[in-house]
Structure formats: C-alpha cells, structure tokens
Length: 241
Ligand SMILES: C[S@@+](CC[C@H](N)C(=O)[O-])C[C@H]1O[C@@H](n2cnc3c(N)ncnc32)[C@H](O)[C@@H]1O
Image 1 (spheres, helix red, strand yellow):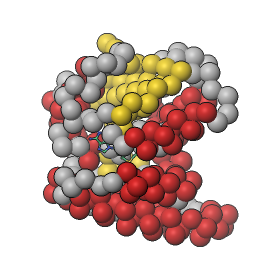
Image 2: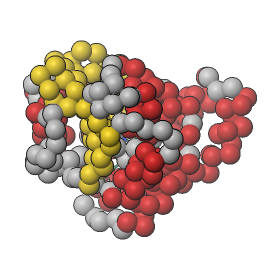
Image 3: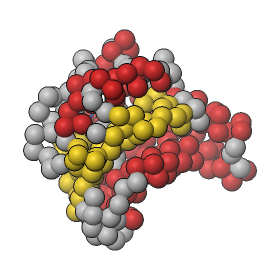
Image 4: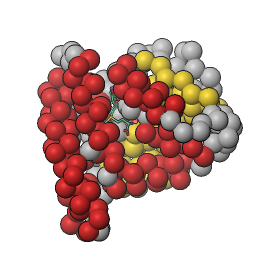
C-alpha cells in the first residue's frame, strides 16, 4: 500500500466530520448500530476502526460507567476522537489506541469486551477474516460483534446513501443542511478515491450478505441478525460469540 501522509488524513478526518458525519444517513446509521448493540452502562466496549470517534462519543453520553476503547491506525483520527470525549459530561473511561487491525496482535493488550463494534472499516483490511477471528477472541463469553460493511463494488456507498435520502426522505430543512455541507461530501468522495488507489481497489472487501455470513461463521460467530442500512448501501450484522 502506498503511504499517505498525516496531513492527508488530518484534512480527510476534518472533512468527514464536517460533511458526512453531520448528515442524517450517518446519524441514523449510528443510532441503529447503537440500538442493536444493546450496550449497557458498565459495559466494556471496543470500536475497531473508530475513525474520529463519533460512535464512541455517542455511546459514552448514555453510559454512567464502563470503558470505551477506540482503535484506529491513524493517530490524527484518534486526536479528533479524544477531543470529542473532552466535550460535555462523560462519566465513562475512554482510551484511544493507535493500532493496525491487520496486525495479528492487535487485541493483545485489551481487556475482554462486552461489545466490539466495527463500522465501515472491515472492507479496508488486508485480512478481514483474521480480524473477525481476533475480534471474537477479545469478546467475553456472551459478547456481541456489531459490524457494518458496505456491499457495493466501490466506495460510493456514502454518496449513494445521500442521493437516496435526498430523493426519498429528506425534509426541506435537511436539504438546506445538505446544501451547506455538499462541498465537504464531494471532497470526502475525492479523498476516498485517493485512499482506494493507495490501498489498491482490488484489495477492498465489499462482501454480499451470504459472504459476510460465511466469514462470520468461519470465525466462530453465530449470526443473530443481518440487514441493510445506510440507505440500503451497507450491511449491519449482529453476531454472538
Ligand atoms: C470509513 S472510516 C469509518 C470510521 C468510523 N468507524 C465511522 O463510522 O465514522 C474507516 C476507518 O477505518 C480505519 N482503518 C482502515 N484500515 C485500518 C487498519 N488496518 N487498522 C486500523 N484502522 C483502520 C481508517 O483509518 C478509518 O478511520
């Protein structure tokens, strides 16, 4: 993989938070993920590929105790995530670790978790099957994996989710909001293209439902539910250890 500089990632993360993460499709996705996870106060939670920490910041708001751990290989993403945890009142303990999820030892220093999340990161991994096996290993006996992964053959899931939302559900207020941040979503799309080139497009894993179920089973999980989210562009699976 071609190495992209930290400056690239810093701008990308900023643009991502300004554009994509402020819009309804992403906020709805995070709500759905959270709802299906059944996370409870006091749980230990890991978000693998946490990016700028939007899911963790959201989880932490409702938790009175427990621990949330965000993992990402981009230190600049974790800077954004840490900053979010400093805003508002957060009782929960948090930790953000720079970590390559393709490294077979990524879970070595982590406590056992009640829930492992991974939202839109699996497709980018070199060995997603290996990641799933390790994720199962870091879960407590009754633990759950909550996984989101796009299943389209390219990285246009974000744009598609916006297009579908704009044509089917968006209110007038949503449209005004979208018009304000449309530039950022376009720039994010261009950045995604650069990332896909750097990784090598053929190395990305946009699994269909059957393949995702097979890979989860092969890693030792029992699939509890699987359905389409993000305006029908991605799969959300809940799998039990
Ligand atoms: C599309 S972003 C999603 C971020 C976040 N989960 C969200 O929903 O906003 C994918 C994330 O996966 C991270 N990622 C990709 N490959 C990784 C790897 N090998 N190890 C750790 N993180 C990785 C990227 O740095 C990025 O933050």
